Length: 426
Image 1 (cartoon, one colour):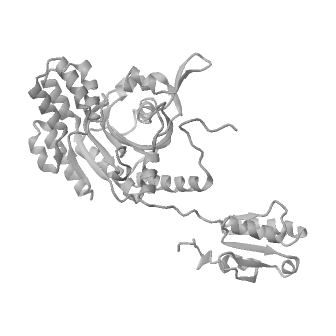
Image 2 (tube, rainbow, N blue to C red):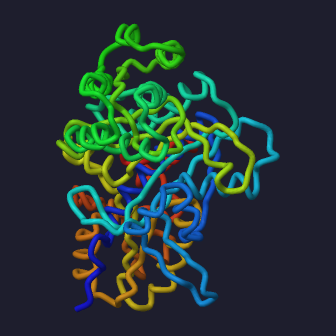
Image 3 (cartoon, rainbow, N blue to C red):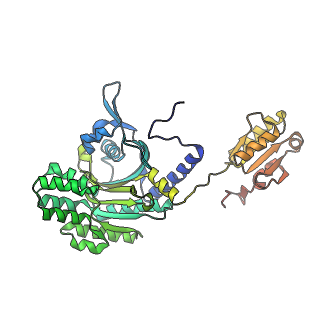
């Protein structure tokens, strides 16, 4: 038996319904924040991701040569494709540009809990300005999405990459070593960072000062320790998100994000229920467009790990109840099959979910199947009922049944009241 490739998953109908339910919440929240959806190809030129992340990214890419001998890669993330799309198609549009996206990404890494080789990312970008309002807007949108999913426990940590960059520059760290050091600090790999910094002549005292910055956590008052413009900038960001009703944020200058293109504010969202691998969202302000042949434009965005958020919801005990089929149609005899299809078509035409026996089952087996698929009602069409334009309507929960006119099926099921469609919940 051929299995799905390692690090990928099959999603059965109930799981797909659950995923679409939560995906639609994210889409709705993005839309009400003024973001519009875009979509980019699942594969791009490999150079796009090398320019963004450096040649080491090749170790994580699903990369190959196509039949035209072009170097192609399945996308490992969606920020670079989004900015490539902007440079190609939207660079002359009025700014700011607010876009969101959802799709599959691929990374060749060791699969583990909540981490797959094929995974799904939901993200948003604001392109065209570098202001505290822009950064606050992105954070507010991310938090609104997470709240919309009903995740109970999460923490928002906000930092500024400029604080550490300036400290490292003042300490004499050369540009070619900057990204490597930031990546170590991002992972809290202090011993490895100490070896690099010590190797280029940074004093022990300065190294400790650098490490202390990454441990600076708290409310707006900790920004008193920050020299230069970064502290005042973060104060403004915090003021704007507080005005927007976000109270879950804290300052954490240890949020580094470890990528070269970040230029200012950076943030992460954590779900403690996930344990050590608790990050579910991350982002910040950056510039990428000039790498892809466009003019330099400041952007702010975030990416939310959809799979990890769903895992956090599951561990918090959230469940999603699948919507049952409204009606299962059963012919009492073979000569009623055409009539059953007629009624089924009428039900579907007004938005009632209806299915029909297509297996030629006898009555008892057809009703057993209706119960197995959790249909809310069964409609049985017999010759006698058909002659009076009636059907037998059975409530599959209570077992109660009655003869009703075909035109009254909808009202008798409680799906229509006062001209409005009803669901099981209301």
